[in-house]
Image 1 (cartoon, rainbow, N blue to C red):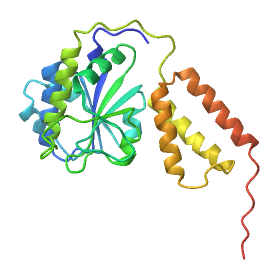
Image 2 (image 1 turned 90 degrees about the vertical axis):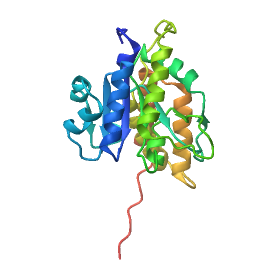
Image 3 (image 1 turned 30 degrees about the vertical axis):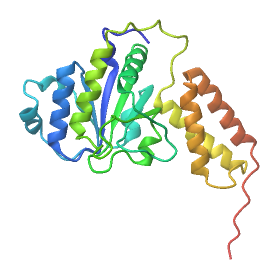
Length: 249
């Protein structure tokens, strides 16, 4: 895609099921302070623009751009790279702690496609389904005795580091268009269906699909590569033996 005026223009902050309008308003203020424009909310607590404005004075433009989604996949559909946030370790996910290094990488990626920072609900953080959508999972290295930061504080720390990282030159655009999250989700759905059709799953399909997701995220597939893998999965489905009819008594 064409280069944008600032990599920050291609960063979206996604709050998944935020539970307090105060944290939404404080997150708006953090974005406005650090020059980010795009906030997406998934299944948020009810709020009014006036509630947000009390915490984010003179941020009506940012508030006006807030997009609300019913499902997380809709909010991430046009994103090429997702960084999730967590306060504690989750089995099956490697947790990173270098916020500054990740911010520099995100700014570079944002020069070539839209990226997202994903934050979970205040009480529980990101659930497993949300973590499955993340290419990386990052934690702010707080005191282990009290590691869970306030949601809006976490947003501010992340976007501050992003702004600082903008001083780093962005490399030339690589060949090929990175796959969007929507393209990857279609591939994962079709891969699971085709593997089931040929009887590949002997135990725990969710564990197999988790591993396939992690492989795909590490490979950083381009759109053309995803299209090829999707075509292969479709062909497997066509070639799979028909299902045995279920006998009824």
